[in-house]
Image (cartoon, helix red, strand yellow):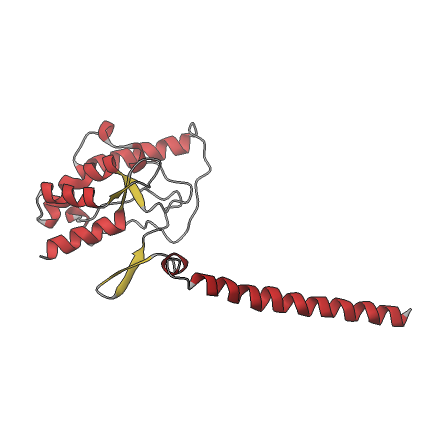
Length: 195
């Protein structure tokens, strides 16, 4: 009986060792090697965006920029985060008729209408509703267009120039419709304003 127990223990330890090496060393090294294939490297590293040699964000993660002076806000803004904390991802899991969600949407709509100097009825839905993760990198063209006058006024660029930058940063993949990558658009606006 002890001989059988030792035999089974030895077999179990050998299986543990083999799977530890296979799944703990060989598999991670294989995944890393595949990530080095040209064309996959940038995606594997998080699609990092650099400016002036420094990483400024990811083209896949939308973080709402915080202006130093909210009265002179030069940035395009992303969709809101359900968590209210950009370092945490997650949805609210509240239904469309939830009174807390409806109140939050109305509050966001009023705040955005005031920031942009427009009527609350003109604020697009993606400006006031959070995504499932709360970290969408893109906004709708309608939400970007709503922000153009404020960004132009606070950067000194013409509205026409800012609209061209919005068009140049509009892609075919967004939130179900053509979307504008906020980080890349803000970098383009910043670069245009520096010249």
